[in-house]
Length: 241
Ligand SMILES: C[S@@+](CC[C@H](N)C(=O)[O-])C[C@H]1O[C@@H](n2cnc3c(N)ncnc32)[C@H](O)[C@@H]1O
Image 1 (tube, rainbow, N blue to C red):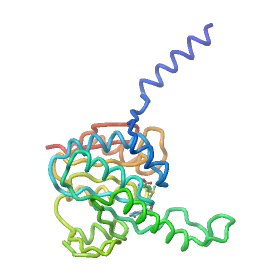
Image 2: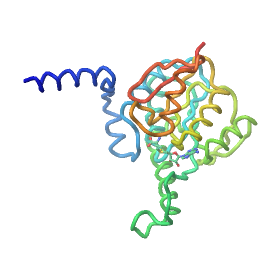
Image 3: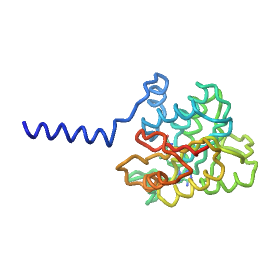
Image 4: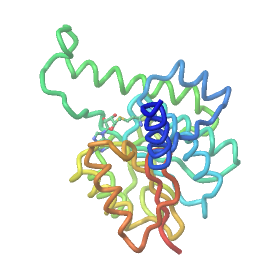
């Protein structure tokens, strides 16, 4: 009996510090997630919905790290749902962390082939699910992408369209390299262009997660220019007005 009471109290304390994430129930996203491979934390869907609904301007939305396009398609879905005019611009070089060997595990598939397969999957998935407002996708890592962004460079995207980079940003979803050094640089680059009232979401930043991006998100809570607006369980920040 005593043990049961203690367990109940512990569960309440745990719930207080780690409340359950809010999950969006949406028929379209359910079917999209069946077909489109990806690594999207379901809690991020609620955050995307919130951010897109509350965008402060028509400045572009940036996604760092698209993989097979699942988060790209979900973000784009909310852009269309809320009839927003913001362009969605994504970047990925399809260079994965932890590619230690030439081959994928014990298979005869090389990582070079795997990369091509993922890029093709991205194009196919995005072309199928986001055809009505196809995102602009630049095959660059985020450092190079922001280098070009700062210089207002015109570049071809993976679908062969001209894209003029540069200007202010309304929202950035950071889901590329998860190490502290990379995420910090991503944040610093985004910060240069993010409008006041703009949003940044760090993937894998939830409490208890050991990635460097989680450490950075915790540090950002002390930054007076940003406010933590949602933890679901990943951290969403807004630049103060
Ligand atoms: C966790 S996956 C992204 C998952 C994706 N957002 C989804 O919904 O499934 C990380 C992606 O980031 C990309 N990436 C890794 N380092 C990067 C960097 N420095 N800049 C841009 N993308 C990067 C990888 O190629 C990979 O596709």
